[in-house]
Length: 76
Image (cartoon, rainbow, N blue to C red; front, side, top):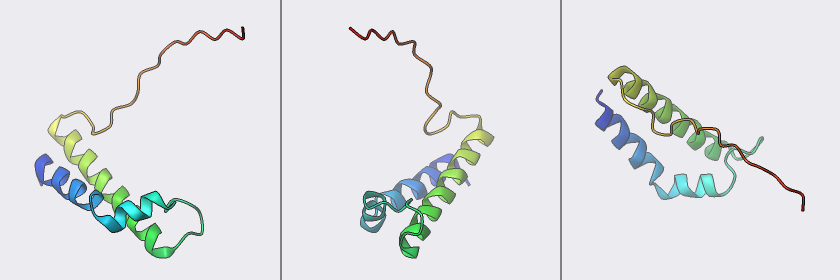
């Protein structure tokens, strides 16, 4: 499988209306609807597949880790 194919599969799945509904209505909430949990599991599976193919191809991940930014807080 190529990176392009893995990315296409992930993007097509994530652009479906039922997936958008599931993510918009808390599919990650414990004891939620089994159909919503199944959609979340499939999204997770496709993302792992994409990241695995990208790593094998030597590419950066879809969402690289954020870098730390120093923040100065003033209570005034």
